[in-house]
Every structure is written in C-alpha cells, then in structure tokens.
Image 1 (cartoon, helix red, strand yellow):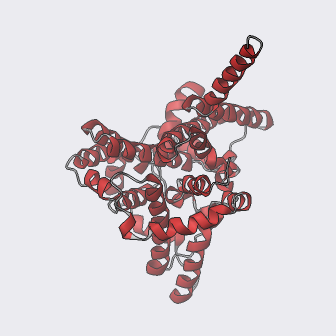
Image 2 (cartoon, one colour; image 1 turned 90 degrees about the vertical axis):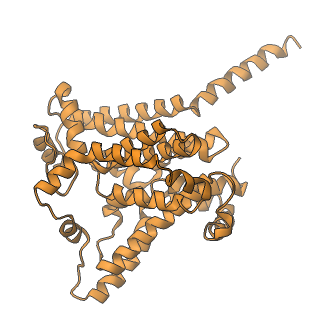
Image 3 (cartoon, rainbow, N blue to C red; image 1 turned 120 degrees about the vertical axis):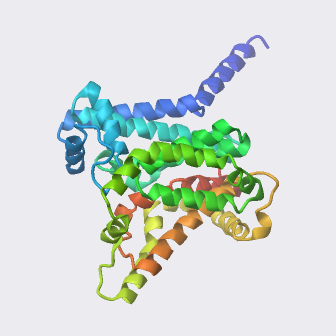
Length: 369
C-alpha cells in the first residue's frame, strides 16, 4: 500500500490540475493566451490597420456622444480610452478585441455553469464561439464593432440569470447597466433584449421576474447609460428606419421576389453563421439529432414550459427560435434580402447562445464521454 500511495497522490494532483482547466480562471487563461498569440502574430506581420479600423481610429481622436449614425459609439469610446495609454496604434485595437473576447469566454462560462451540470461542458460552451467561422476566423481581421456586441450578449444573459436566481434590486440594476452598454454596441442588441424578455415570459418562474416592479430599475439604468447617444440621435434627427432600409433593403425590383429571397436567406443565413459547429457536432454525435427532435417538440409545447424553476436550455432554444422569427418577419414585412452570413454580425445576438443548446443536446444524447 505504501508503494501505491504516491501514485494515488500523483493521480489526485493531476486531477486537480486538469480540473483547473475547466474552471473560470482556466477559461480566462485560455482566452488571454489565445489573444496573446494572435496579437503577437498580427504585430509581427504588419502594423497596418484594416479599412474599417482606419475610420474608427480617426473618429476616436475625440470623445463624442455619437460619431456615425450607422454604428453606436461604444467601440470608439473604448478605443479613445485605451489610446490614452497606447496611442492611435494597431495595438489598441487588438487589446480591445481580444480583451472583449476573453470577457465573452468568462461570461459564457458563467452562463454555462447554469446550463450544464458538468463544468467541462461549461468550459467547452464558453469556447464554442471559436468554432463559428465568422468569429473564429473573421474575428482576426474584422468584427470591429461586433466584439462589444458579443460580450454584451453573454454578459446580459449572465445578469438575467442572476435576476432569476436572486432577484435583488442590485441584480436588476446590473442587468440594466449591461443592457445599456449593449445598446451602445449595435442597434440589434435592442432586438435581442426584446427576444430575451419575450422568451422568458413563456416560463412562469421567469415571467414573475420580468414583470417584477424592479425591472423598472433595469430600464432606468439602461436609459441612463445609453442617454448620451440617444440624445445625439434625437438632436441630429437621424433616421434609423432609413438606415435599416439601406442595410437590408430589397435588392430586386419586385417586392414579392424580394420577400421570397429574403425568406430563404432568413433560414439559411443563421445556419451558415453557425458553420462549421452545426455540422461537426451531428457528424461526431449523431445521437444528438434524435435528442434534438425531442427537445424541439417539447420546446414548442406550452405544457412543458412550467417546470417549477428556470429551464435555461429551453430559454436558449426560445431565443434561437425567436431569432429565426425576427429574420423571417423582417423579410416578409420589409422585403429584406441582404441576409448573408457575412452580414449576420448585427443579428448575432440571437444565435451566439445557440452553441450552448447544441452542446446540451450532445450531453443529453449520451454519445459524449
């Protein structure tokens, strides 16, 4: 027994070290290392700014309540702040981009801890955005303003979970604070908030939290945070409806044709946006397809909504479903046709959490060990 004891101790030590990888700090460490590697590679290759970053670099030389109507000012505000230390350099953009990405991993992990029973799944869910082409690949040269949106979506979901679990006035204020920041990242965050709260209303336990009077504190906090930009929009008489028309307006002369094209792209684009994760998982774990069919059936059956406590995978499914409905209604009501996966960044809030639901299906299918 004395000979085996050291071996058992070493095995326990190895287990402790491996468990650290699945902790919050392990996920943060992976995010920081990932950002450091790509920052070093990017700086070694060139210090030139991508085209979109050149414009942002010029705008961020002054701190303004708003810059261009097409984008809210959060990214420029962050850039202005970081450049007080770094100057108007490529490094400032990389610090913001990979700092926000690491923060996104952290918030997704905190969300995943409530979605999964096993912390290993929570860690994999936190890192799942790297398996989406538009983030895992295009992130390094694009996704300028979208990184703030990505982080705000993950953070707001975590804050909403705190409301459901605790429901203190501080939790509502925190949710409102993050929501206000999200509204300053991209306009589509407002649509995500609507879908999040509407989806929560389907579950009685969450409905009580949403309809609580303290939600007014969230609204007030969010309004205060977003007020400088909202004032800038109103004072400048900027037309957001016209902006939407320019971004996803019909590209055909026939409104009927535009609606048909938009409807097809509204279904295709989210699936393409989730590529290749939405292909890899079913290939590796085919059992998740059967589990998924059952989950979808229950997810659209109102009788399954009341389970006594918050069902987070169900909420994520409803948010995803709501995202599809938003795109479809947009196509049918306005004839929007410009739904392509590379233009899906504004609609990313509806589908950023979807990989968590896909991983839940894998976990439930019993294929993963």
